[in-house]
Image: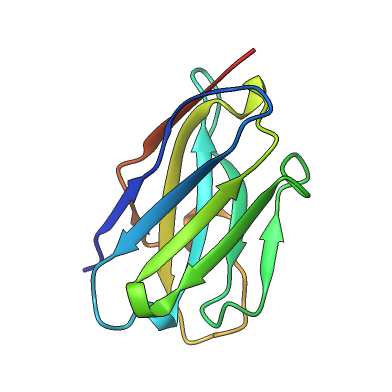
Length: 127
């Protein structure tokens, strides 16, 4: 069982930045592919960014490419989402997700690929 705890959300003005963190339990974090997803009120959960277990590969949604950066620190069992140039449309609950995988270089962009989810952290961007 993997437990994920997100933090770092909050209220920020448009153009501002936030860094989300997600700490995972377990001793095999380096074997987890990790992803960030978000869900706004009345909308479906959508993919934001993901990294392979090795950290060597990443993928981003077109809507955040060039503004968001996903990274991981395996020594701290933590994955980060640095969000810059935030827009009101980025407002949502952000979730991190983990996929314990044997494919160290694979990036997963679909929610059903992930076995474990955090409780979410709210990000609100004011105009």
